Image (tube, rainbow, N blue to C red; front, side):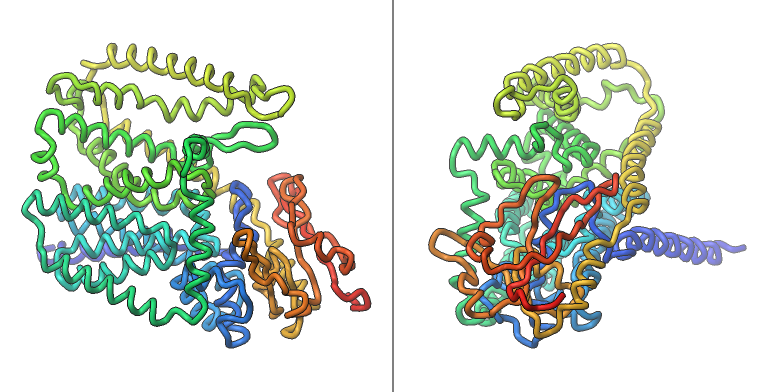
Length: 595
């Protein structure tokens, strides 16, 4: 066989492998998409899926985008609403259709990360790095879980990745498209505003390194303004006040305006509490490998900076490295002090983290056998900053260990039942000192020892894979369909003329044709659908009785409880012991209505 015959066969084999690789990462995102979300995560989706799909569902079923006062989906995330509407029109209103845009956006993130690395580097090292990054992102259970629910965060992350990917392509056309896409990310979720400071600092880097093309910046700004103008022109009358009201409401919840809120934000980044116990943050618990290697990558950057100087070192970086480094740093500066952190808000960290983790692992895989540990650290004098970074390396291990030991020795206070912060701080100090002493001893012993970094990288990947396989097996072996079947069963009595109200009525109407209303308190002065009883004359009220054993505080139910007739209590979302995590309650407003 000649060389000309061998090359096409290799190319074909590579393309077949790539296709199968991506299909393997797409399948878990779209298979059984109507099933209940994983029991490993919090339950905010039980109302949020319906709220974000509210306007798109109305438009698909009744032909009108706005039929009541609650328009959170259309106002805050018009991009998500539009994608949901298309899915509903093509596939019909269902859980599958509501979740499909997020599933495809999650898969799109995996594909974009793969090709973003490949477009910057053409040699064989880039092939390994791109596959590693796609594998890490595509198989990470935390990222996958939130790709399978109808929330806006995955859409926002996909558009951020796409926008930065386009900016990194050098051409004027890609700069124009980047402006449109990054503004669309803002219209998927306002938190994406943090991408603009990132891009501004990238322009400073381009100017300092001689890569700045002013024409591309002008085109980007023009396209961003054009996108903003289109959005303003398409904004329906009356929605702009709602846009301001909702963003002020969410900003007051989310912005760290006091030292107390900043401390709460720091705590909720690493820990969560429940039933008087302390737990590791689910993000931190499941993404610890990515956190450690992202931190390691930044540590190596600081070592090189010490010897080469900042601007010289920055000039040697690729644009994707600058973008993703700033993405993490700026994002965390905005996000860590945030006192309110639903788990899905951590998703924006995953694309840059997997790219840096893949970069470190690739270097280890190609490292020559017999490299000493001391050779990884370039000696250019001592630095307090370097010392602080080295001393911070054990933090992920320490923060993982604290909740387990805290609950093992029961650090709850006697009167409050809450975790004892003094005991937790003592645990932190003790575990940290044990890690530091052990680490210093091992580094001293092994600093001149010849290590097989390829083998270490393989062990890291194996460890990561075992963790993900555990969660994947847990998901697929405990599949339940209670949200789908409950909505379907309610549809036996809910017709298109039926009006159902309540905090979860939108979500549990995704498999039937009822008209759904949500009352939503924005602030002390504004409550959406405050006169829903008089305006819509609802037939049913669907609310939450309890979440994981704790009674749900429905603030609207007491106002009309005397007009309600209890019908049934509905268990949904079983845990691993098949016990329902949530109990719903269904009431009728008309006692004479038969069920």
